[in-house]
Each structure stands twice: as C-alpha cells, then as structure tokens.
Image (tube, rainbow, N blue to C red; front, side, top):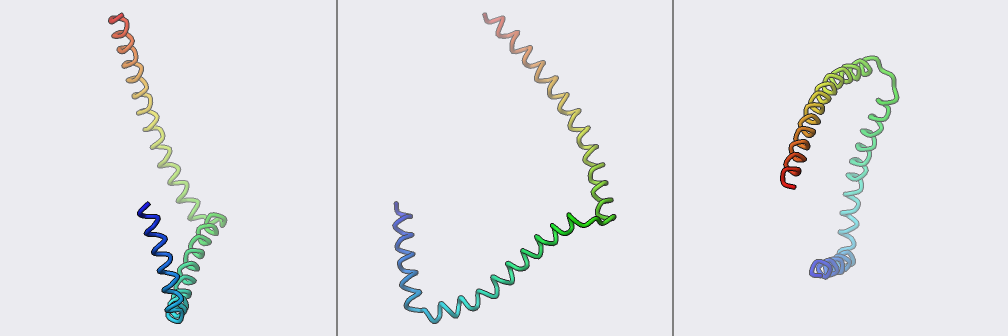
Length: 105
C-alpha cells in the first residue's frame, strides 16, 4: 500500500514538474531523442546483422559451424555415457530401497 501511495505522489509531482518546467522538459526531451534514436538504430543494426549472417551462405561460417557440431557430438557421447551410469545407479538404489521396504514389512 505504501508503494502504491508513493507511486501516486511521485506521478502527481512529476506532472506538476512538467507543467512548471515545460521549457526545460522540452529541452531535455530534445536532447534525449537523438540519443534514443542512436541507441535504437545501433540495436536494430546489430539484430539485422545477425539475421543477414544467418541467411547468407558463407563458406567460412559453415566450416566453423561444422567444427562446433563435431565438438558437440563428442560432448553428447560423453553425456550419454554419464546418463547410463546414473541410470544404473538409480536402478541399484531402487532395488536396495525395495529390499529394505520388504524387510520392514
């Protein structure tokens, strides 16, 4: 409740401040607009560059991706071995748990 009331008070004071210092507000807005356009344009260009890079068939990019896939394949086999080891351990622990449960009954 305190946060809500504080937010309302801050918004009210902000509106009063805009009306009292309208000229300064417009000057600040005029200064911030080019910065916002610059940062927004830079972000759009970066995202567009990624999209173009994904769509264009460049041989050196494909080679790097193939190397990454080869490394990933090695990792996958390692993870599969670990998975099988842990599955066996889980089965062993389940059997022990069932054995203890039967002994208690």
